[in-house]
Length: 178
Figure 1 (cartoon, rainbow, N blue to C red):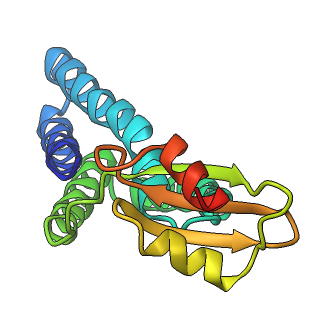
Figure 2: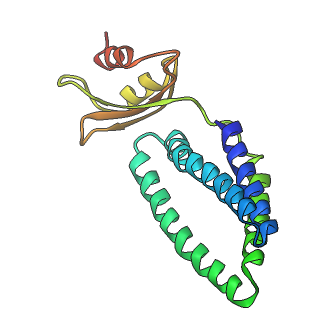
């Protein structure tokens, strides 16, 4: 996932450079816009998955809400900043600034670690099973379990597992104490 993410940011950087140098050349503008939206659409699909994998068990909804809010704030601030730069300079400067930001993003993103390949599950705890920290400890000690959050009020467990090592059925059996 990290390689695809870095590739998308690199394509975005290339698109900004192409658009910066395009001037009034129609086909260069078309190529730049095509590259930009190729990277944009891939990132649009990739980022929610990355957020989901990185968010703590039980907080995926919160993380996705923060992500969505950040998207809209980014569009608002980016649009205003782009308009301001275009007003004081020209459209080529907007693309140059975009290229510089994409280069900075690429440098920062290259330091990120590969996200874990985990699946998120919500498992209801059956009646008769005590929902406490001992259950959480038992789950965390199981092979393939990366995170577990026990929510007594919901009688449920939010858990992140490596699906190559364990599966939902095994987790349900572990919760039942079988």
